[in-house]
Image (tube, rainbow, N blue to C red; front, side):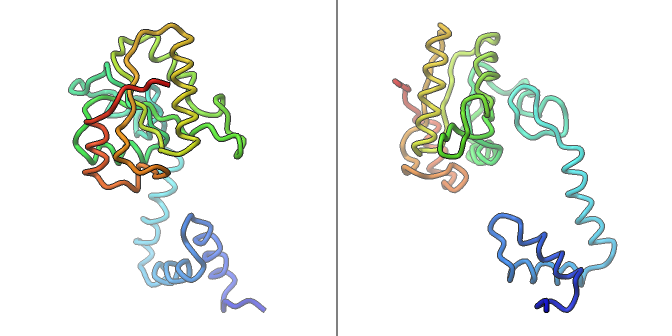
Amino acid sequence: MSEYPSILLEQAVNQMSSLPGVGRRTALRLVLHLLRQSDEQVEAFAGAFTRLKKEVVYCRECHNISDTEICPICASTRRDHATICVVENVQDVMSIENTGQYTGVYHVLGGVISPMEGIGPKDIEIDSLIERIAKENIDEIILALPTTMEGDTTNFYIYRRIQNAGIDVKISQIARGVAVGNQLEYTDEITLGRSIVNRTEFKG
């Protein structure tokens, strides 16, 4: 016999608890909260996620999430388009933007190289990064990947790809004010901002 008084309630809890970090008890509390809302509120809630899934796109230039083909950062004439900050994911872009310390543009890899998880260079946006550096007038590449073994492996792979392509560009990495093993999205804005400002040359 189900622990829930309604099959529909159980199905809703199952869906909610499939989200990262949401246990079944929290999922039940959220579902019951939604159940107490008006039809209009629930429809607006569900509609926001439906529109997000159907209408959101990835920027043609940097692969950041966007409502348009070119994201606002890449489209801005006020940004330094000669400096590209390479990050793992969209959350990292938002974290760095919140510091207010960076005025260049980004390149979102969509992951890092992780043989243990079956993620290789072809599974993330490294080829498009190399193509972008080769065709655009880039002065500096900032490697702002996680300070983990996978992040360091990806940094070194990108460094070697740029070297092997014979591209003359400055390569730097964020300062190690970010603790080893940390994800950027969990780093406080002051520390992250200082890590961007005090970046060091990447020497492979």
